[in-house]
Image 1 (cartoon, helix red, strand yellow):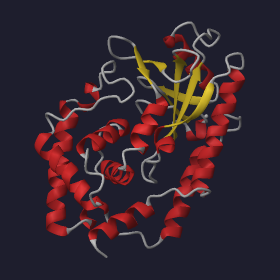
Image 2 (cartoon, helix red, strand yellow; image 1 turned 90 degrees about the vertical axis):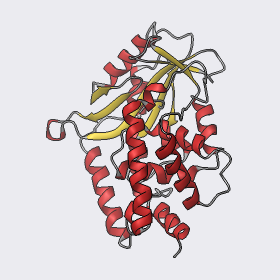
Image 3 (tube, one colour; image 1 turned 135 degrees about the vertical axis):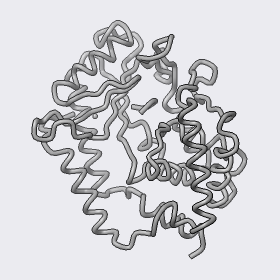
Length: 303
């Protein structure tokens, strides 16, 4: 097969098909988390839905987190008077069933069962408050930075990714990220790919990827990204700090050299031939992580 056929086979091996056991397990987790939040905040009637890679269509088997947004009405105060109070109250509610790791704008859920304590469920819950009755723009609490809040829009983010025409390139570069242990956040990488491949959606995958790596290798210090939902209001510079830029540049250079010396398999490995065994192993891992959650329960921005 040629290089683009190979890349499509790699993508195929990374696809979570509708109705697959993996997705069923994730959907069960979402239902559990959602049930818990609705029970705890029944007076507020929060909007609870998928965010992140599940909503954008960029999920891959090797690196996915289930993002659940939990947005409260703009005039509701029962969940908290301030964004920080909402964040803390959602954290406290989730802590009744999970070990919760606080992140800048989200809450990471892990197993609280002593026999599996700290096992990562790969679920991020993002609390927020709508800015008005239209339920479009939302304020998120931000534990770092001067403003302590972000104004954003989930649907704008989803459209920005889905309408880019670059979903496959994004998925392959997410796989490259995890295979190389890169620290760049998924959200930042998605925006970066769209910026680097602007006007190049008609290119074949291999050319798109090489171009992205060449740009990261040669221009990492000058490349920037913007929040499509709030370009001037949200500063994303910390997502591409000097260390992350240097890492992206050096690994991109090494990747291009690997392709030159030994071809694409040196980057993504051989195409899986034992798909059923591999699939079963992933399902077992997912179910093992989900074990022990006995009560019904289920964002976005910075993972």
